[in-house]
Figure 1: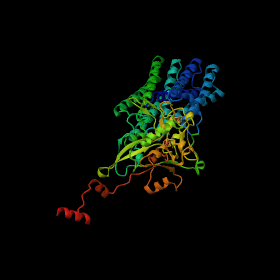
Figure 2 (figure 1 turned 30 degrees about the vertical axis):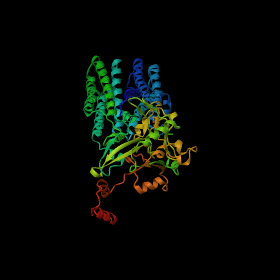
Figure 3 (figure 1 turned 120 degrees about the horizontal axis):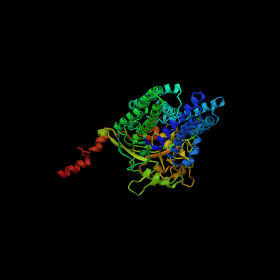
Figure 4 (figure 1 turned 135 degrees about the vertical axis):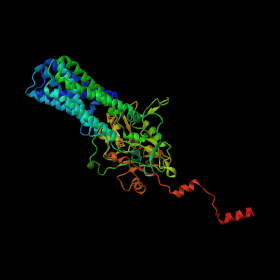
Length: 316
Length: 247
Ligand code: SF4
Ligand code: SF4
């Protein structure tokens, strides 16, 4: 599948934003996060900034962005519509919580409910994003049980990495559950990613050129002539191919920068002073964000669509 | 409304689609050309192109003719494979559409895109396993086979012309159009008699359209076609001529 920059930026940036919102909501409700105004302002600015940047860049993928509002209408059947509804609905509690955090400076009582709603909205939105891909049978690489946990965990750990950095930036001590939970979450995300790749590499084909044409009986089917001599929408959108060698290299980049390096940093963070922790946590957040962009690029570039069976692919 | 019609709503409705005879198709692309022609000027047009007369022309077509080879040695053959929307009963392209632009009609099963609603996200084209949807490069809305809905119900046209443009134009008579829900229809009869089949059903799409498989030619016929030998036992008249001439 064509790795469109607008969609890669959308899913990675909004993923980090919703991950951060989720942790702010959960941590806020549990009273684990500092209620200082500066921290609140910076945290929500970053989270909503990520989310908004992502949503805006996704609009660049549309042929008619001015009709995007119509996407709120089909939530009964469409995961993309559900995602749109969840994304916009999450702004309400998130903005309210930002207000409470920075103006009221109080996260008790009803604010706790607002915080929980923010966390719920953030998680729901990422879940819907993942389901858009998970539900497409025509792309077996995406139609996988690992797609949803992968999206959720990557959003969670990128959000967590940025939260750690913000806490150190404002001279706060990160709460123990976050400090200790991060490495486990990174390991879980690493595991899911590895499992997703293994499945993609080993799964039996779901469709073949024989099943796509029904011409199998006399023997194997070969494409003799394509239907058109120039490129078309289908080929540009769905027949993107990446060399195996490049894919292997980019997978290693993903592993090191998304998982290995941030994990190593996460493990030493509890034992270093703030002067070291601040740049280290920034490095972890940046490295992880970059790694997720590479991972998402591969998520598209490595995925093969069944339409390629009509253009020379033997199986998908 | 991108929820598919419920079985109750579909009950009694037609299942209109195409039936393509892969035995007779000669791969002339006339159907594709006439499809483009009608649909660029018809109710759903234009069906645009980019750089149409330049070095790299590219545009939206609703019908594409692929060519495959199958079988080995003397059993091998070339099969032309026209492909357009199969108007699936469980159309995944419809349910994924976030705007309500894509829908399946309850009364005849035709899958359509309402252009004014489409935001050009392209998700429906990803959802179709067959590549039956293409984005219009200029209008930036999704295009697909409409079964020439602006012909088949068009009372301005003569009765005989109320068929899809591709069916009307096929010089080999390889394309049929009809109601697959009606067991008495011509398409249903052909499917029964010739073993009509749907493609990539493992995608759960329940396509309505069918293909008729290439007929299997008996070996003797093939051999006879390949090597027409002069016959050793001429008829009585030829034998008489033969004798006369050699005498
Ligand atoms: S062939 Fe493709 S575009 Fe047509 S109804 Fe089926 S899934 Fe939709
Ligand atoms: S491209 Fe148009 S018809 Fe297709 S899913 Fe998007 S809005 Fe719906």
